[in-house]
Length: 328
Image (cartoon, rainbow, N blue to C red; front, side, top):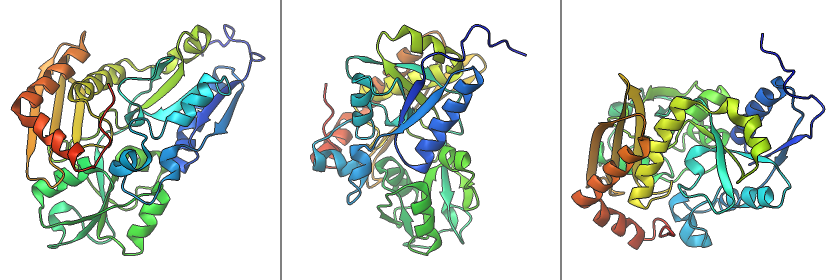
């Protein structure tokens, strides 16, 4: 059994900043438990973010409505981190902008949960079984675009709120189906309504989906050392690749870009897409690269997609006010 002698149990308490949703708190408590196993004292502080407060519009339009742009689920937590009110923040990695504001760093990327999306329904077993014009809930342009590409007849409606709220609306019959991240449903043990785990080839996940990113103040070597054991090599490589793709495309988590990397046979394989929100255009890229430079693979995929017309699709998305134009 591993010795804890290298850590003192009476060291300064580590304070974790977290959003207040059930899923965010599950994630924060998961990290807290792992740190306590190492002998640390841990506290969790709930911080309400702009993305949590604006619930009357689809996520893709929150940036335009609130003037927030990137980081709608992280800004207030980072402010608490910068002020020294918390020592680390636990985020869904897909919520973290590809370029962190000055003064912060990602100390660890945890072992990844299932990165794919889940088709949830009370009465239908998969996307193909949905009747013509079925009402499907999602506030993700990425999911909407890929659904429309294979089922242009579907009636896509915004579905905001925490996991409980979305599942309740589905059970009440407000929607025929809903698309949620499999990782969140698995973590919360709310898998009853999952009828289909959607293949990456049908619905490419969001960059970083299924992984947690642990953010700290840049240069906080003590906290970084405490968190080293949480950093998963495979998840770090895969998500570094995906986030490089996103950065190359100039995109955030609320626009129709998908990226999923995994290690196969000692190589890193990246599947990526850029799509028009109505599904009328969908560009796909598949490629392999070396594990020792995952960011290079992501950049190359992004540049390839841009050269094939992704720039025009993304310009249209921003022009329609679906998302805030990314800041440099």
